[in-house]
Image 1 (cartoon, helix red, strand yellow):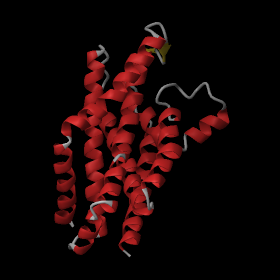
Image 2 (image 1 turned 180 degrees about the vertical axis):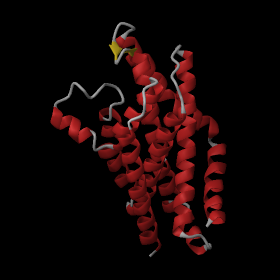
Image 3 (image 1 turned 90 degrees about the horizontal axis):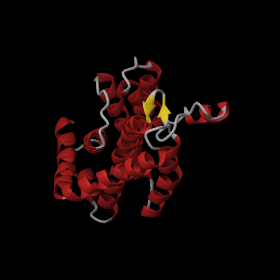
Length: 245
């Protein structure tokens, strides 16, 4: 299994190396725009949880970017399936479904970590630094695993790029804006807070923000992300096996 997983992961990393400059720009543009637009709009007067808005925003952007970059492998999988028929080659090779899924998930997690590094660098350029302890990185990795596993599962289930666009429009984009990324959820009605706490990004944003602000971790966030990661991995395995049939 390890050899098969390594082969899938190595292929994705070689492709990423070829597109490194474009990927770097793509990872940096959106967070930079958010920092400039929201930072300028909110100014230095607004404070959230005792911190400036940029300090509040940065952990949220890290959670959101971890999600989008990890989930972004779905597009790569679709291109490989529909245009280059790479998945058929993996089917012919002695690579198990678990090895294929884990190789793709690890590539998504690697992309996510690259996005986090870029946002931390952008934050430093704006004079914003946050605490990044073990609990911070654990939340980042769990969040990346959840959405990379979800990406593999959904990429194996859809039959066209149009379906992929619908998933992005109705799942990923709303989650990016409603998962506690840009504003605290405390001011929302109780029913809305309950709904938003069902989203993995909400737990990731709160866990990352807590460690970034030097607060003790709330283990419930990590437990939810871990449970969703296991569920996502099981779904990914089932989806890969179904696509093989």
